[in-house]
Image (tube, rainbow over all chains, first blue to last red; front, side):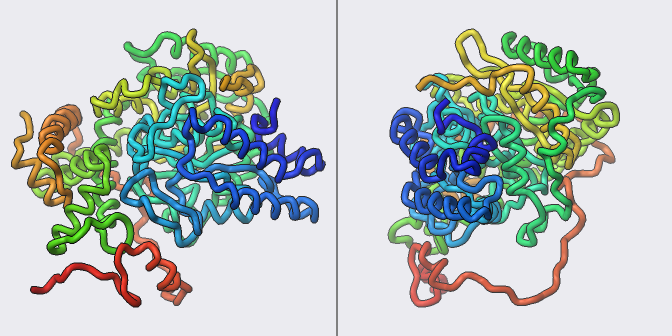
Length: 485
Length: 95
């Protein structure tokens, strides 16, 4: 297997044993980007000079014995993270010429750990979308089938890992934006518990739902990356004062005696039969390893998409009010007055999906409609959350498919926003409840399209997700398959 | 019921979004579709259910009011579309 196809935990060993240097590894990844990115288009910006400079520093640290787990590992960043001195667009014309004046906390922690930044990855504009087709900088293609989407909104992050254009990447997940793209590209994607990871320096979409997390080649790498970025940050008041466990220490304990809940509402009519079969097979594999499988019910599941498509746009309409053409971002030419400056700067700077969500959110929050929409959705959110509380009285972890179907074709759903929204049907409830969720590969369709399964855990219990995910990984080799490019 | 043109235009002004006529027309259909779909929440009996605005809502967290370093002016003014000295330039507000 080539250097650019190896997981970080293996590369970290090789770096320590001086079998390879970070500079050699980084050059191999940069060369891979040159070879395939004109077809995949995972990156908005490749930071080649920065990467080589960081690799040289990492090599010094490795020489001096001061290396940490991720020292010298090539990491790609979704273009939603501020990395000081680096262009940060959020895939929007609004931020076309924006250079980050400071580091996001997760970026600073990766720098401290000695990671190497390969560049900024494509995404749906302001993280709004499920296919990465809403980017102002062109679509990203799925490495497994270039006619298909890589998922979204972190589609550049998932495609980069699947194509070997970064060893691991960071994404963000507001309604499935890490897990859905991971599922569609045969990678591992984790949305941590709300509050586990700082959102400081992460461009905001829906602040009560947004969370930062890893997209990686396997479960161990996801644990490694989460350990590096997690933990309290005084600059984000929603980041929790909770110790971050040593995830890798507990990961290999096996699943014997663990109770896995299967929610009947996630196996519904209309679901792709190949996906259902792959997920049922994974359940059997875990059962064979000693896990106990229990049917559970999450009765309010069918209301999750509706709830989300009020709550998230409402928060977005408020968060995106900051793009007013005054302090940063796009400003319309020759404004007549202040209102004209606001209206035209925003009308020109935002793409169609962002406008759509701002409009929905503004409507839901407007006088006379607030109770009917926003308040009602917040109450539904309470019911969805209570479903999980009840289920987790019976089980340790919940297992579901990540998506109802495999990666769809480019352009297939762009004219019908509602159809696009429904592709997140299995991932959204997790964000509304604030619990952690992880998608990992569990097979392929007859057309060689990746299938993912989702593990949902109790709040703050990412450890059990890693434990179940790692045990499952040992029983098969989906995570070792690579897209032919 | 399809949202009429005036309703969409009114929301657009509230949202400070300049929309072209074809955008308004498309949004009439699309917003109607989305709002019709979320109507399903009305099936739910939410009488007496507390709203969840935030899963970790514990009131507003407080910290000591101590001065911290902030970014130098020239750092963040680099991203300003129009700046002069230490200020952002905007169109005249008071006629």
